[in-house]
Image (cartoon, rainbow, N blue to C red; front, side, top):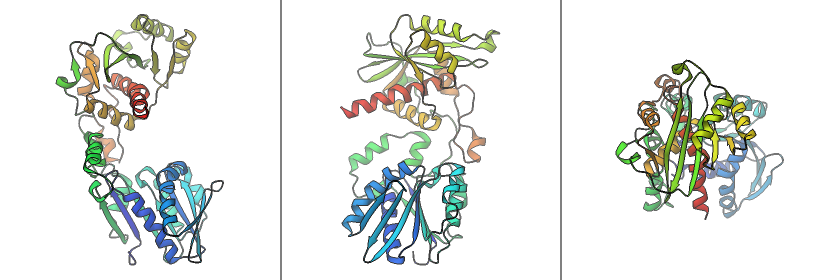
Length: 391
């Protein structure tokens, strides 16, 4: 390490890399510097505090360090053995975040979850490390093989004089075999390859390659449901989709669908007409409605009618991952009569051109029912799972 310009640690989730690198960063800073400024960077300062600072502080105290936390300035003052250094916390997920760190003089910088940061922010922070002996410390989970961090830092680690370390779950001695198996069951497809196997894998082929008609399509629905929820993907020129879901014995079932394609029908419908159709679709069923967040006027029309409607969470990649988890767990199934939804499960694919640009993005085709499924999973299925775990 003494002959390197820094460290890159990547690999699977829960492998212990974050705390190992963060503690090493602090020990190195104290051993080599006194009275210097350092930066600790995450997607947001809040996530950095939660994921790094909170678990790190007890470890520092156990090592005999004094820690003073100035939350107003997002600044940690770390002291030991007569030496004192200052660590500033930054969020770096957006391009304009670089302005916050510009002008500083740093003796080192820690980047947590580097793939979530803006490249311009990372470049600006690196440029601030002008103190003799300064080093860069990176941690991340893998992303696509064309991601800028993979191409510009990991693939060029030797050229940049960086020590590259790869972690797996088995490098974390605190994880039992049972806990490892549980984490392995949480991810499917490309997310399993990245987060469990620690591979820099491209998102390619079918988005839901785990969808199996034998497991996920049922001919007979339960007679009763304990909870109901409807999800809406709204379109003007594009199709509009309504999906009704019901929960029985911990499993959510897609009960029925509504699918209207204005182009194919030769006429678009108004908000009022779609609201009429939704009321007919629900047929008096009292349930919450989770709708396309871009459909502001349609949501307003539903609320005017007294329908409990709210905006969906439109985090696409995270939503896709959670839908995959729901399918893999066997807790999300669909009635055989939902023809459009089932068809889209087979036709929904990753955009290979986007993958080559380092982006995870599905092709914007055959995705209307898929968007509605994602809205439901993020807005109700995932929330229900979290509620059940908290009981």
